[in-house]
Length: 244
Image (cartoon, rainbow, N blue to C red):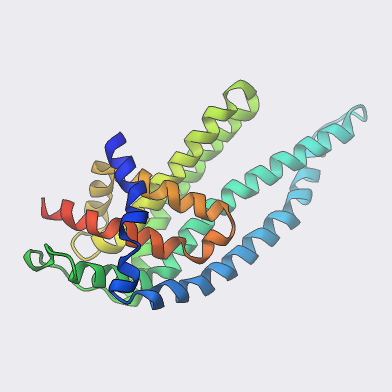
């Protein structure tokens, strides 16, 4: 699995030349606009809601002594919760709304792939891609939020474990993000259930791809090009593995 994680990460640098070679610039710029809107929405929501949620949490503290410290701590917890939830939500929104552009991009990369002539695929439509993305998001987001909340709670209760739970939350989100990027190719060959099985069988590749994807989202400006580069980085490897 470690080898696949490294492969998923290195795919970003390996396939960047395809942008110019295959003329993929339009698939890079259009999702940037989607990314800007999402970045503004989530950033303003996290800033505006953290104090309100922090005050709500502080209201459960019945004593005056130490209330200021509790309020600060509660606001920090609220900000962390909103940030994690925002990242999860942003990741799915990016994947869903970028799908009308990422699926054709994946198809163009596949058409130039040496093995593409041996594969039999079903072209996807923009609406079909969005509906499929919504279906996948609906089945994954609750599970991901629940697991992330449990890990976040463990980290708060046992501060010594917080570095480990933070890493696990990041890897969990990376897995689902990488799986979403892989599905832009898988949707032409598999139904949703079969696609999930494929991602699970290749979880190292999904995690590696998702690590870079999530790192770009956390940088803020990564919203601008994370979907395009994530799809670019993993499409060729997915085609190779479907062929196998």
